[in-house]
Image (cartoon, rainbow, N blue to C red; front, side, top):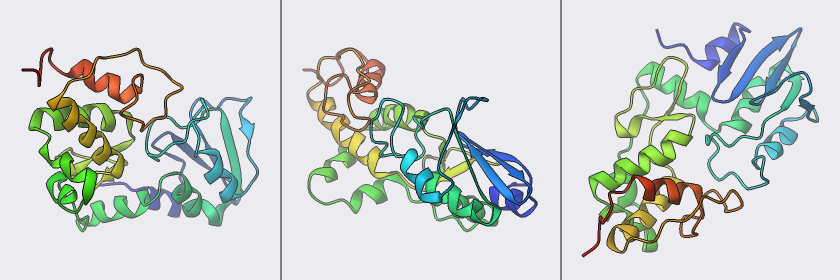
Length: 221
């Protein structure tokens, strides 16, 4: 049976969602980020403080993809138990809703082509990326995200967060990949100072990972 975080919350049963551990303690709920040991930083006990804390990664870069495995580590926050769902929503927007819809069989899955067809202007070109390029983009981006891309026919395991449609970050990556397919750039060393979604910038970790997966000479000639 598909077990959801909402069911665990109702039963006050400890669980892990993505990179966050959730534990119930005498009327309160404690959320802990990755690598949170005894010396973890205690955040201000508000949902807003939690939301602000997870906006940046450990290198101080903005996190445009909430599910990316770039969440800062070494923190915890204790909140009133009735704020559990709000806290999870602050960390992983719509995760609880999508889990519930998947469990009920009502999750609307939107394929890549449908999402791209809605785009206007510069992002419309993302639809020209070939199948191999799309697969590389999924490997690079979805492989760094806690959500399972059911829009790409992946199967969400019990307790996972299903992703029903390609996110804006995926569309942006595929746009750049379409241009790289036509005129392959030179690879560069990965640079942690480059913004997560600054795909045109040499050193961007996803750019370099994508280029590393691209067969030599692809798109040339």
